[in-house]
Image (tube, rainbow, N blue to C red; front, side, top):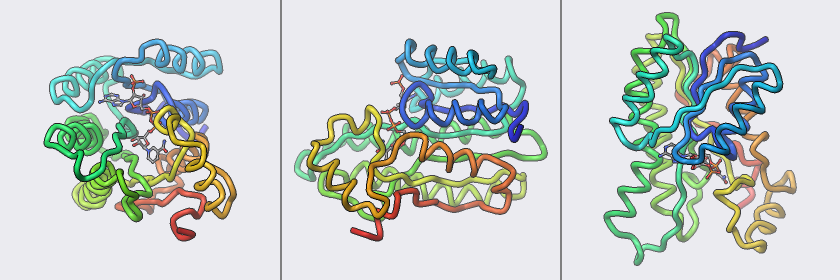
Length: 248
Ligand SMILES: NC(=O)c1ccc[n+]([C@@H]2O[C@H](COP(=O)([O-])OP(=O)(O)OC[C@H]3O[C@@H](n4cnc5c(N)ncnc54)[C@H](OP(=O)(O)O)[C@@H]3O)[C@@H](O)[C@H]2O)c1
């Protein structure tokens, strides 16, 4: 199996894209560590599902936008597994606001929830990567290339995720760690559940492949970047949008 015995940490693995990534990496043989914020029932459901398919998984609750919580969860992972081979910084939040509704709390919450969580996890997980290296994959967004009204702060926080991805690829390359980002367009998860049907239809119709993404569509690309097959790719943001962005 592609990822046999690798230790893979997926933040936001309790739901949506993160849950699909966790299942995919577990199917490839990795031992899964799912980190979630508060949704214990969903996290345990993903763990039970992986175990029922013959895989290995555990879940830890931690708000990865908080530095002490990040330190605590990584310390627990270090004690139990001794290392991290694959880190998927998937946890994120979306809050739509127009410019007149933006305030300092909103900016801090969205930037901490998206860029800060990725940065803190990467920084504190680093000592746990083995000498021969590993993989880091971050979740960005197609909105970094084509923001829409109301998505500016979210898009800017994801643009920061991509910039950090490219910057840390340079810094971590000599350690054998690749750092890449995946930038999905609208994907059917809880995050997009409140999207008006007309907007969803517009995205599906505007996408050359004629539909909205499912979490598995994104998870398969993340798993590729986390695999040995992607060993010569680092410092890249892979637009994973069914062709939508060029069609806009
Ligand atoms: N869905 C899309 O259309 C889309 C498009 C482009 C990019 N993305 C990005 O893809 C990633 C996954 O999105 P999704 O749609 O699957 O999201 P989702 O359905 O809203 O799930 C979010 C996941 O992240 C966890 N989480 C959020 N903040 C956290 C924190 N501070 N600490 C720990 N866990 C946290 C949640 O945990 P709980 O279950 O405990 O709440 C949940 O597991 C996000 O980074 C998102 O920005 C999504």
